[in-house]
Length: 66
Image 1: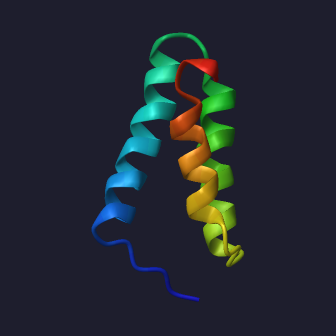
Image 2: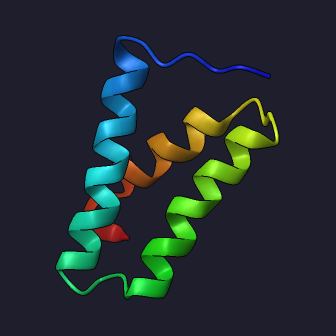
């Protein structure tokens, strides 16, 4: 399965990565947690899960609650 990220999806991907890295930088995620979160996103995409964008959106929208 091939996934194309364009427009809003690409913006969401960027915000997702930034969210994980900022949480790591702020010590809300340790290195293992940040790595696990990023890997989870790749696994969802590779597995062809239909709601992989929803997962990323959830992480971004959790904001300071994460």
